[in-house]
Image (cartoon, rainbow, N blue to C red; front, top):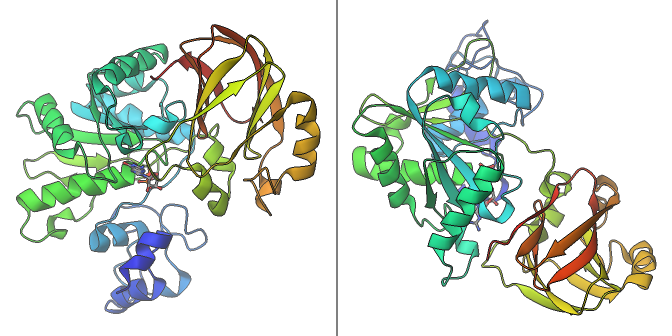
Length: 401
Ligand code: GDP
C-alpha cells in the first residue's frame, strides 16, 4: 500500500480500510468499536468512533483509530473538551501508575496541563520535553532542565524528573524508557502518556512502541492489539498497549489548547509557523519607535528604552519585517496577506484580529507568544506592546537561554 499517503495526510486510504472490513458479515446492531469500545459514528472523521457509512454492515466493526493502531503502528489523537479530559486524568489518581506528560519545548506555554498533579493524585509525574532537535548542539541541557523545573513550578506543577527527547529524530528515547523503568521500580504499573495536541505525543508513542516491538515482540505490531479501557461515565477511550509484564502503556487522548496560535491557522500557513528544523535566532537592533511584524500574525512595538537587541526565536520560514512604529498600522492594512503573511488567502478570515497588550520587560526575560515562538530581551529595560489575537497567550517569562 501507499504508506507515503499516510505520512503526508495522516489518513489511512479509505479503500484499504474497507478491504480490511470486507471479510466480515452480518449487520452489527450494537454499534460499538470492538477495538476500544467507543460508540461508532459515521459523520465526523475527526471525532472518536468514526466509520464510513458503507462499512457499517460488517460484523466486526472497528473504528478508524483502532484500525490504524493495529495495522500501521500509528496512534491517532482525538481532541476532547477539557471537562472530559479531566475526568480521564482524574481516574489515574485512583490507581498506582507512572504519568509521563509530553511538552513541546517550542511552545511550553501551550503545553502545560494545569492542575495535573491534583488530577493524578500521588503518582509521579515525569516530563518528556520534546523537540530538542530544534535547539543548537551546544545547548546547555543541564541549565535548561533547571529552567524547566522553575517554569513548571510557576505553573504549580511538581515534576519527578525531566527527559529531553526528540520524538521525530529518535533522540533520548532510550533514556526516557530507562527513567520510566526506574519510576516503576520493578512493579508492573501502568504508564500513562498525557499531553496537549501537537506536542508530539503520537510521534513519541510510535517511537516507544518501536523500541518495545524491537525488544519484546517477534513481529512488530502483533502484541500491540488494542485492549479497551473506556472510563466509567464517559464514552472517551484510552488505548492500552501491553508492556509484557502485566502493566500497560496507556495513550490518553490529546487535549486541544484553545489559546495556541496553531489552533487558528490553515495547514498551508501552519507549515511556515511550526519549525521543521533547528532554530536560527534572528537578532534585531531596535530603537524606540520601531516595530517588528511576525508575518501578519503578531507584532511587537518598541515604545520606550535605549537602543537594544531583541533576539527572535521563531520558525526559520516565518518572515519577520521591521518598520517604523508610525508606519505600522498602514503597513498592516495594506500588506496583510502579502508582505505580511501568513496568514494568507482564506486563512486571513480564520485568523482573529490583533489585540494590543502593554508590557514592561527587562534583560533576562522572554516575551513568549504561544505557538509562534519567543523574543529574548537583551537591553536593561524596555516598554513594549505586543499585538496578537486576544485568544492567544502572550506571557513574559524568565529567559530560556
Ligand atoms: P500530537 O498531536 O501531540 O500527537 O503531535 P504529533 O505527534 O502529531 O506531532 C505534532 C507535530 O510536531 C508534527 O508536525 C510532528 O512532525 C512534529 N513533531 C513531533 N515530534 C517532533 C520532534 O521531536 N521534533 C520536531 N521538530 N517536530 C516534532
